Image (cartoon, rainbow, N blue to C red; front, side):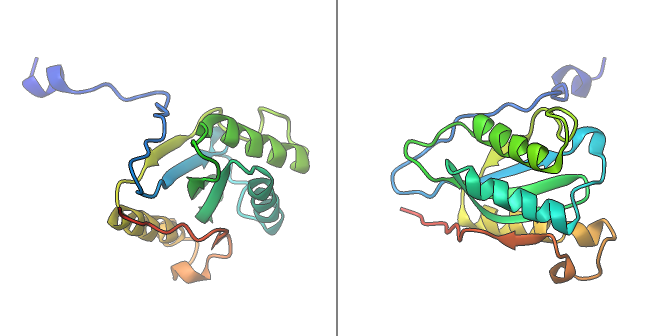
Length: 163
């Protein structure tokens, strides 16, 4: 066995949702990725865009900032709307349920069961992640310029404030 084989970590099959960590006056911004079940490309439509944004508005424990909706997954940035911050898991489950209900999809037919999240550590991290996210439609060959992708936006201005 090679040394790299013995020290390699196994790939995770399920994401680990760590609790949000607050420290002093630092902002809390979390990067979240949610996928459709079996990566079916059904999200990038005007109707789904409206349904998802409406669900985020109704799910009030977290505020959605910038987001990009791609055909089979969503990238979004969010921040707690209540203190102390509540778990992301019930919030994501709630808005996914609202979208499923509004679109007539069965409760487990539209979305993957889980999601991926990472708490950002700095303003630079937020800026870098947003540049990656906004250019996703270009990398996937959906548009030539990121600003031409119609299924993206910003619901709340999430600002990074260092203490």
